[in-house]
Image 1 (spheres, helix red, strand yellow):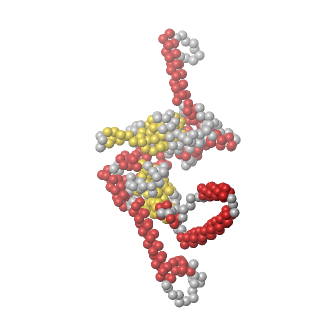
Image 2 (cartoon, rainbow, N blue to C red):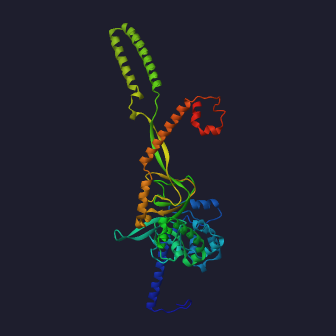
Image 3 (cartoon, rainbow, N blue to C red):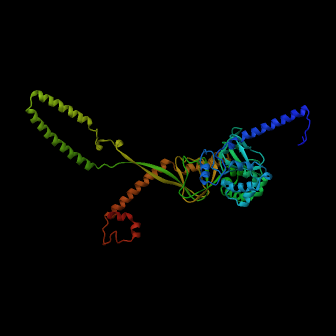
Length: 487
């Protein structure tokens, strides 16, 4: 149909034209319903000059699954346009707003401007597949809002069946699919959404042109670290590629708890690249409180004597008073005094001498001690499946770690390598009973040693006029047991 020219259509052409308009309208409505989640988001308003309103827009109305972001609806609408239809102002505004996402913070202005020209916006509802395993690597995805996870399909040679395992949670700032795009091999995992996801889409040609160089050095370091561990060194390239997708590279400062029964990283196996960690166990000891028996017995005896004297005087006075009373008054007085004595007796607390209690009923205080069980040095690993009980792993120095999902690692159990390693760790690392026994034996030995040294030094005859005040500090610190006798 030519614009501006009225044409006479046949009934068949009119019907086809109406069907075309109807289908186009339905496709537009379906597209709006598909993107309704972010179109209806009232908190994604435009950023103005009022700083307080901008902060309130970021902080109010966000759920746990959403991420605070300055990328508004108009920026998403810009990324839905083709590169040719984007104006220069829209590109410059998008360039300024991109570093609010963690993934784009490290890039310079020139790279950000090129990304603002080619980045596309995509939205996926809950439970949708972003890409499937074995698909060609056509692009990378950067999560703007929401969460997704990876599904790994593998063949179980024991059960002779194909299984699917879920690994990891990818949230805001996480890039999906970089490893496969860099190596130009089919997708190693299936990426699906667990919440409504907003994504940046960057095609493979644009990634190779803009970002590939910055990621090449990172993955060269990863490959070098893989070769340092003899259990990972002989994996094939496909297994290492999947590991690069699932693994995490973490750095922790000194004196940081990196693993505990409630830690969020407890599902990962830790490989130490640099630094030192130590395994810490908790030993609980019970010690009964010491009662001062001599003082308590002396006080109880004196109080008992005073009570006996008072009771004797009271009985004597009562006998004299009741002697001069009539028989009726005497009976009434006896009843009243008996009732008063019963009332006073019922109000007295049921006290019990601590000396008559059994040891199990005596009060005791709980002592908590932390014991260093072992140390993890570079090229060692832990939390691979060995018995850690409720122990803690704490960094001794600044530590760099490689974290691999424990469930996926157990599927790579070629020649029972990980099973042999788990057995070795269970045999080498002492259990809780052994740690507690050694701790108590060492405590008893130290107490005996101090007692013996103190006894010897007490019998030592001083042949000079020296005392603790005219001896150098170095000498005092070298033998503190000797100077305890002067205190």
